[in-house]
Image (cartoon, rainbow, N blue to C red; front, side):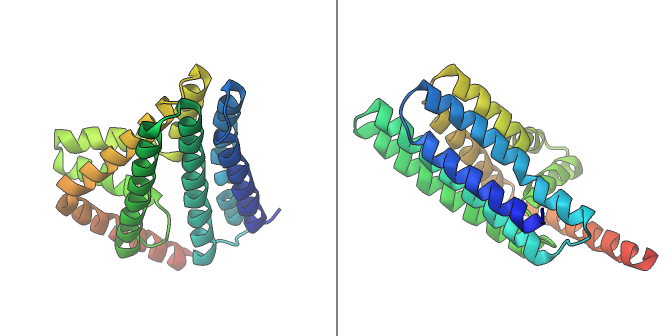
Length: 217
């Protein structure tokens, strides 16, 4: 299997998860958690294949990021639709719409940060920048933000999402998504200067590592 094939497989699983999430009932909710977790696991496969076959490239990293974000957005949108359909009324629909817009705007904001400061298209850079800012400044709010960003990472959030689906409480889905959006935006809003400085350090170290690796080769 090529890395591109693995990315396509991840996308297909994500789209099936999104459709399942939009359906009513407990079985559909649990299936959503399982499929989302599977998509999260598969999301790391393409990168491992690329490294194992020495086919890593910026284009491949960009495809991986796009698949990752499309999977998340569609799955979360499906979860919101399923919650609105099951709960009924105008309030769930309104909350779902607001959450969807907030999520898209947050991803665009993170994408601009990555494009401006990272050496590749991976959104993991955001997590590294937050951790670096917390370590460099030692400020408690940033340390708490770093811990929160750890929970928002693909692998851990997928486990939390799965656990939430097992409870049968659909309202937990939008609550988790809104919490993640709020934490991300508050961190970017209040600590933008610290994050930019940390991103510069992370970028410089990444460039140095790459140069060292090229010299050794």
